[in-house]
Image 1 (cartoon, rainbow, N blue to C red):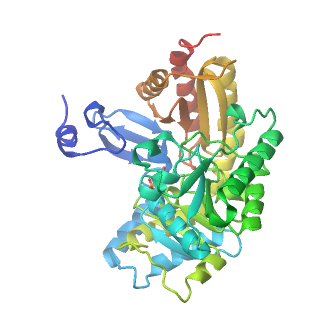
Image 2: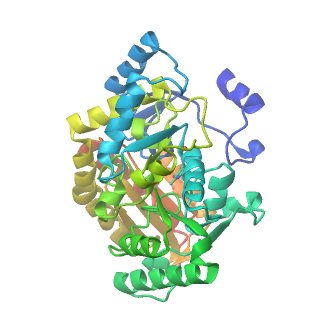
Image 3: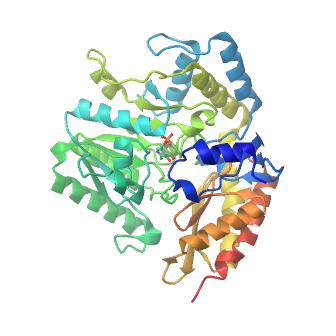
Length: 436
Ligand code: PLP
């Protein structure tokens, strides 16, 4: 018997990325830690972190209290005023960024962070074009969807956004006929260099990359790739933008995923995990050089809710809780000792698993029909695995032929083991579809 909430949703709510008549959303009524409950009392382990953002899990008491306290004191402040938690959040966020990046521009989420990063890069360089990877997702607004490489761009792409796409490194499905990470790295950099040369380096304002592409497949770049991109940017005076919206704030077992690669971008975009998504928040961290461009001439952009006190109070509480609770270390340890080894064991037992890859609490299971040819699993086959996970009490994230395990950074070892064993059982569904 459908509930009133469900009926009203179907009558009045227009959902993201969906054919409206074809969806049956689960009605969630409660959430705590790594678990959520639906209106029928079914319990699920949330291995999706919703949309990969509840990095401290649900209903974390310290964040909830900070929001309540802020609401009692000063519920909203316009951006032209200074405010305690906005100031403190900016200090804490920039303190986690590489040296020489000390200013933060706050937005409402990840897409608008990328919109503003591109605007800043264009104004800073005086150049029009931007390069971005085909295997990427950067958000749903106009510039951000045009930066995005995956096919969700197509309906919004009129070819006029000033974005040129290229292939980043990904050895499992190499575009460069590479057989080692070193070859993949070298050839992907050569391809990027040739793209720059052919486009005209003096026309290019920015190269935008997810530090670790997330939705497009959690593809950890080879060690030398991002430093190589940095070098190309330096050679041609191009702004390097690293999108840490999904990979940042603990997801990759580090404050920022870029910490793994020893690279300093010019702009970092963030959102999601910065406050576990309890109140919408995103932003751009600026290098001092880019910030200087707007020191004496106005930055032509802004948002009514830039640095909203409820959102920034939640960010301060999140960052303090992460430091106090050893959340980053826990995420790194889970990846190394629990999720990585567990998934590798699962891969051995299931012919439909073509590849597993990840770091921290950021893992992709790539499903295939045939391990030798690497032919991707059908979308129905992948959706059936996801449905089996749900049936067994675990919510994964999914995209294309992949199941992503992206639980909160403070997941317990026991919950990690339960999630892995549910996936292990659910994969029997895709195993039946394999050949070869
Ligand atoms: N960039 C990356 C890497 C993302 O994963 C996302 C969202 O998933 C975005 C940008 C867009 O963020 P938002 O949905 O908050 O606009």
